[in-house]
Image (cartoon, rainbow, N blue to C red; front, side, top):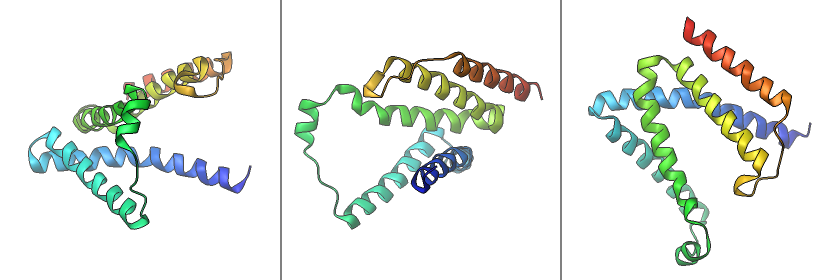
Length: 151
């Protein structure tokens, strides 16, 4: 495996490893401000300011909004909606069902939809058909979720 690929895999692992921490930070913030939605808004504002600062520092804040709106499909804007749903949902649910069960279900949802996206080549990704091994992986994950829920 190339070193660059290894770094990408570690970065993906870290992104996943930090999401339960993010949910717990957002939950503590929600308690502090007395509102889950306000907590999510603050979280997104902080992230937006970090990204804006980075883009300004790198002098990379350039795009033609009118051209993007005219030429790209409407659904490219829904990432922010999905992100807001994700943050609010996990901020609210993790303290109620626990981090391990909540994120096991998140992973299951991600895996199932990812398999469908790959199988059908949705959104321009290369087609990678569903195989029996992939289905067995989902079954194993379902068993893991059941074991986690039963504790």
